[in-house]
Amino acid sequence: MLREGPARPRQQRSIATRAKLLDAAGRVFARLTFAEARLKDISKESGISSEGALFFHFGKKEDIAAAVIEAQQERMLSVLDAALESDLPAPETILRLADDLARLIADDSLVQGGIRLINQPSVDFPTNTSNPFFRWIDIVKDVIDTGKGDGSIPSHVATAEAAEVINAMFIGEQVLAGLADSWASLPARIERLHPYIRGALNGSLG
Image (cartoon, rainbow, N blue to C red):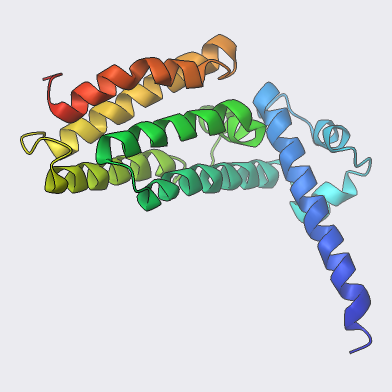
């Protein structure tokens, strides 16, 4: 029992160090390509001078990039899953979901780093990097079906088509915002999409 006391603070410090390095890596990959980024850039960004900490927690650069992508997906999926707990009518739930996801991407440099990494086709990362976007489609489908059941969305709306159109609109604005200003404009761009999202949900776009 006496040996467990000192181990716990060490474990907490290790967890904190890993999180600090991961956030720093996200910021670096948000600025630089995978090829350009160096381990010493991540160490410097984190304020941890020793590259040994990086090797201890992650190994090589590919491993820390994969960890950034995994964390990016977890954060995006968390926002998406939170939509299922909303008590708002179905159309407002989908609008709120789009707004929350846009704010996450605009504000979270680790998420930005993950998005930039998975959009570099020359780099071989895990094949499930599109999971958040397919999860987005599945959630929107579920919300649309709920709305059709309670009357907040017309019954004639094609669930799968509407969900894919909304997803395509979001991804299009996400790509444009990333190119234009590193996603700073994404929340405003998504807000401008609201009438078109509503159109997809009431069947007036078809």
